[in-house]
Image (cartoon, rainbow, N blue to C red; front, side):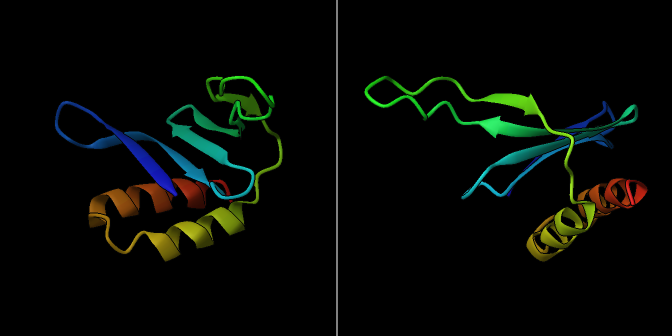
Length: 95
């Protein structure tokens, strides 16, 4: 899992992107106050004999919120509590 968090000028979290299932079919979940965007990640590595392309996000309508919530809880023990609480609160909104 990768977590990118954007902070405001007072270091308060305002949005995030959570990338998961990186070893199989990577997905990215972005959250901002306007809502969620869920994407699959096209790694750009599916052209034999050619250089790797730049990874791109592709819209994905399927989002297993319970799975992502469980994965995040299991992986977030090292995060600062305010960041962890921010992400969990956003994930709980989607239930």
